[in-house]
Length: 376
Image (cartoon, rainbow, N blue to C red; front, side, top):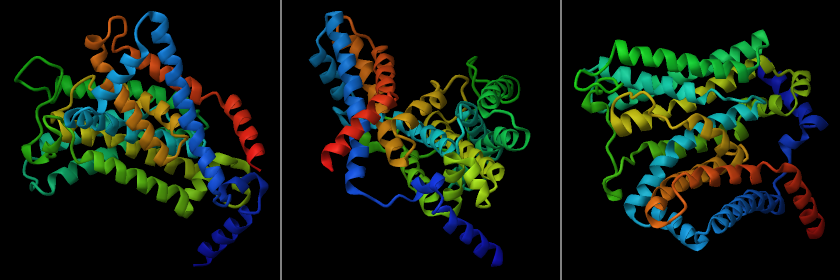
């Protein structure tokens, strides 16, 4: 009780510290609208540059834009695939955003999601007697715990040994690839074919698909991703732990002066980041293929970095950014058939241009200063 009161006294003093003042800025409708304007304008500018490149190639920008929209949301099946592609990006985007809020750069989401997927698959393979209603929950918890452990390791090394998390997480990615490949090929490989994949999980572990979206793998993991985004927002902006995470990320020295253990906070943040990244396994293993496949991830972990940057490390922004990237991934699949000179690889160019326009912080800060000046 006394310790809790002592910590709250520290928090009260922290609100008065100039170094941490931005953590308690009162809500402003104008600032909120300007905050929405910046990423929307950046995305629009990136798309404009991409369409200009299409024009220079000699193809029709209008046709490309129509194809992207129609192929991503034109039918129920198209919308279902867009939401399915967006689901893992929500998880990895949130993972990167949590670490960013603590002043950490989590490049290890790829390894964390691999361990989450492997854990979900191993539980589904080894424990066939788990009741049907309970089985998906057990496998999901295994995925979350495995991801959290893989995130905790670089967090511990940064907090207690001073090793930079970028180097650690890159190394952890390679270790995850090596160990999961070994387990897949030499211990749990399927005997039904020669593909590098494990045996199927027991049927009761599989999540039912949403038939309203036709023959798509969209499942309840999408709702779980949205719920996770809400919980991350509550954690970061409505709890003491969330305040500590943001305080350490904003100014570590100022956070220490008010009694926040930066090392402990960063270990917790990286564990949470790993846990959320590990939830990709729920969507991919339990909701889609039902087994671990080598190379199942088209670099979801690295795409999560772009999603977090576009979403400005805010849960709501991450959700919308993931939906945009999911739509681009689905929409560009039809470009090979609908256009003459633009292929599905156009999505990579479009994503790169959007990231470049979003990351042009100096330009946008200048624009925002002028807009705030003209509106005052």
